[in-house]
Image (cartoon, rainbow, N blue to C red):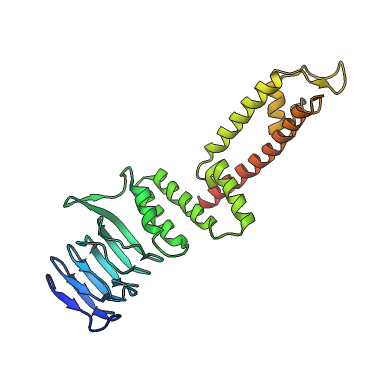
Length: 300
């Protein structure tokens, strides 16, 4: 149907209905225009489905989808459209081996829950390039997923799995971190607060090095502040000499003890409150690290 122009007879109808159709090649390219929904629900396409340089205007009332292809199966899908569809694109539950898209492929709303693909290539200046490995690849794909209404974990898992399969584990972790941040918006207030804490301290387990940065910063702060003042021994003439670094570590590490925290106290109430704060932060960081490590272990 290359170059064909189809017009729905009604403001909300379909221009072309091919639900459950079976074929090897479906060619809607080179000036194909559909003023109405193109329906491919449950279609089985053994070779290629192409909308290269096509226009999918969708229904005239602007409420229906431009392309409705839930549960479709196809080997190769080309969505390098001539302009952005005016209606939604529905790919829920669809399965394709290879997806080709470009700057005009996706409208503001894209239904992607359950969509499975083997690879993605991007059309730029008429050339197809593998999307994985590009500097802005993760940001663009996450923005693509977030065009889908509501929160659905499957599109994130699918994208992360594609990056891992291509050997880009860092990009996969960035996608899964974006999934946790999206999920956080759907949680109650208390859970969101805890989520922000996990994000800032260990990146939900995908950036465990953040906890080390926090601990290093707090250790440096405590060492500098406590080293500039003189504490009072709990029992004079007993215990080890005061060591600011060891004292700070003793405050931050909630398990065990280095003998400094119980041997010294501060007559200055401000420094004593700083010590209490470091103890509390030590517990919080430790809990966050344990939660992050547990998440990593469960994922692996």
